[in-house]
Length: 379
Ligand code: ARG
Image (cartoon, rainbow, N blue to C red; front, side, top):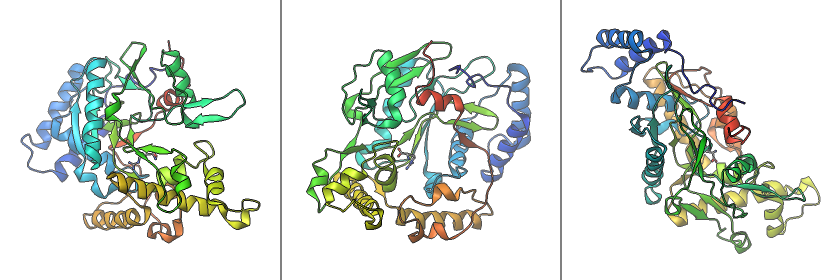
């Protein structure tokens, strides 16, 4: 796969430009430049240069609405609070590295995690955009041993191979934070270390089962998605890392549990002394619940903001009501919103939702997915 695919942008689609500028002026009236004047200004810029620049206010609004429109996100109640860092002027990989470090610091906020997005230079018809290969700012390496067993996060075996190729000295542990792979337009991908003190992590322990703490499990405090393209008014921002705070089940029911991730249920069941001889003992379910107790307990004990799926489901219904009272629909993907444990215990399970693909939004491109999976050649 060509690693630069989709990083050069076509001329902005005029329908998307108009739709966005209308939305911005409808929801945020009293702009210094009136709607019709702004539209003709943009049209003139596109005719002259093939692209246009968002004002800081348009960028902030566009990023927030992209979150609001993300049909797979249960945490959208707080979309208005997204802190938008305008990083369009960062032109070297060193500057981008410094901005990514600052993102981690501001988002982590000593454990009081805040939603933040850093928006870097867009792709234009003349110049492709910088990209980060990593799917998130903090991810753990995965290693396949000769006997086929996996150490670490099996989802990142491919990216781990890539960074080793680029010169990373792999420690070979269960929770090794991968370095960043930054690729500037027209250049080869480059390795960048993450300052250790910026990676906040929580050691996992269970309040009643010390054996779980003895496993030495941990997880990083902030999920910062870094390979989705932000699309606003016909302009593409391929590098626009964003984060919220964790919901416990993401870690306790997926990352540590999926067979193609850490696959830990058999081990947890053994520590809990469960009878695993038949499915009917529901050992998987019992181990799953205790692992989720451990995640929520440990984050709380470490003073790191996290939410549980019951609370977050109720908040999502509040979000639905609020949006509907403002006359907006809430595009929602049931299969992503219903939590992976105890789905039927949460109110989000028991209803249908609107389906729609609204813009602005975030998109995961095939090329970005392939880069994060280490399935791209490094030329
Ligand atoms: N599920 C992903 C993970 O476990 C993170 C996705 C975004 N989650 C969030 N709470 N904002 O790393």
